[in-house]
Image (cartoon, rainbow, N blue to C red; front, side, top):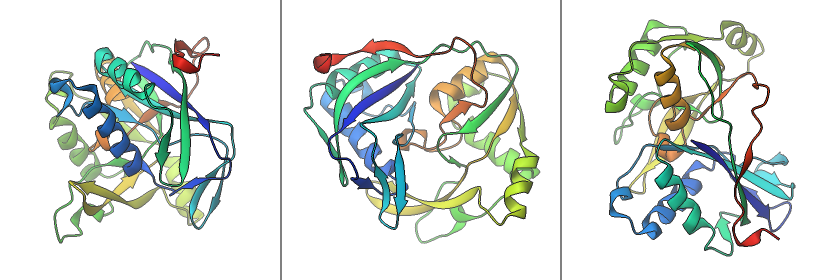
Length: 259
């Protein structure tokens, strides 16, 4: 299931770094610990987007001017999501770098009935390679239309045991989109910071639309848990490229701030 965690913005114009997944990762790890459920202490099969709202960009990052800020949070385990929400709404406010947000409501995204062919966009970058200490290998650029990209993506998916029985897939990057950006000198891949036990690394992430041919179960898995590596750190979250009619969100939890 996928929910939208909606917060009130306490101070308009406050900012976070352009790539702020690490701050969200630490925040969600804190919520997991506060849940007090031992089975979730090492649980990693969840995914989240960056902060969404009306922003402007400066050298110091993203400045939020909207009254509401949203994070998409996703997991196949409803008990895990409900536990996160319960703890989240016990907090009066949350400090994320320079931004202070207040838990407001939660909305449930419409359940998707997947066909075998589905087109996606990336809400957060897809990471393929595991970084190693004192090595730049994870920063290597691999063209999305190359066989190498597909093979490494398959290896990344096979590291998750749940995917092994979901069958094969066909991954088709949007070649027109890639060429258009390349012709304009714009980027669809960047190097991002990532942390393992507070040790900093750098990895290359990719953000572009693509079509995936696979079983409905395969689509459901990556839509709820992310694609590529480090989904629990906020990488590899996907969304549908086309909005399905009747797919509006519905209220899921209104918490103590209902009125």
